[in-house]
Length: 195
Image (tube, rainbow, N blue to C red; front, side):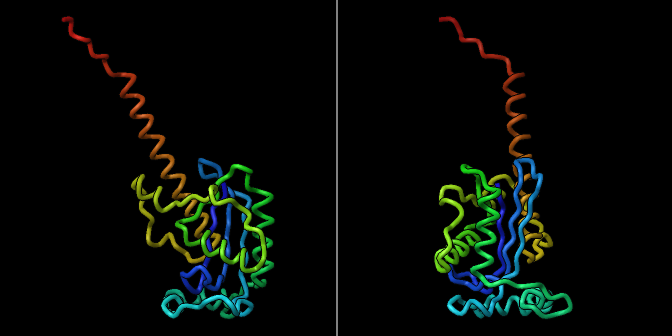
C-alpha cells in the first residue's frame, strides 16, 4: 500500500502543486520506503492558483512553510519541474505498488489533482481507479479523530501521519472483531422449545 499527500495552491483539479509525498506501508503501519519532492510552482503556468488557498498559506502560522516551498525563507527546498516530479513519483509507484495494491489518500483531493496533473503532463497515471482508497471515510467510520496539530503541511510528514491514523483505525476494527468473536464463542446456544 502507498499513502500519498500533496501541498497545493488551490483545490481545483488543475491546482498548482507545491509538494508531493508518498510512503509505502503495511497493514499494521510499518512504513518505508519514502518519497518526497518539492515542485517548482513557476513552471506550472497552465495550472491554477486560487486566492483563498493563497490567503490561507499567507497566514502567519503557514507563511514560513510557503516560503520554504517556494524556494525562499531560511531553509529553501530544492525544486524540480512538475513533469520530472510526476515521473519520479510514477517510478516510485511502479517500484513499490503491488499489482493489486492500494493507493491511499486523506480524501479524493490528492489523487484527483495528481491524476489531472499526470494527464496534463502526458505521464501515465501509475495506478488504476480501482486501487484508490479514501482514508477520511475510514477514520470517521472507525471513530478515529485526526488531531488538529497532526497536519504539518509537509506532504511526506502528513502522509506518514495518515498512515498512523490508518493503523489506529485498523487496530480498532480488529479489536472490535475480536470482541464480537469472543462474545460469540462464550454465548450459550439457545435451546429450541419442544412442541
